[in-house]
Image (tube, rainbow, N blue to C red):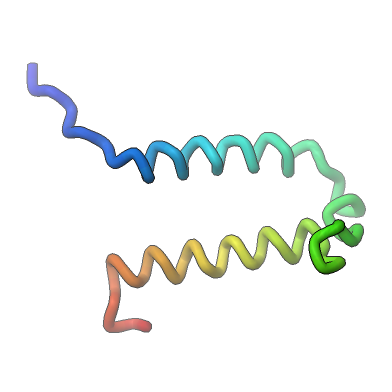
Amino acid sequence: MPSKPPRLQQAVDFAGEARALHALVSQMTGEQRLEPTGFKGWTSEDILIHLHFWNNAADFSVTQPEAL
């Protein structure tokens, strides 16, 4: 039986962070996601959009660098 290839620790950490974030956000109502937070007054929705944008940019930088 072939062994599994090693996984980068950063990928393992990112997957864990994504699961933890999902666990928090999935418990929030839409109204709660629109309430200002202590971070610059951003809403949770603002923060999620920010994370999503930069996660996509990081992905593109590896998989499609010419797209940037």
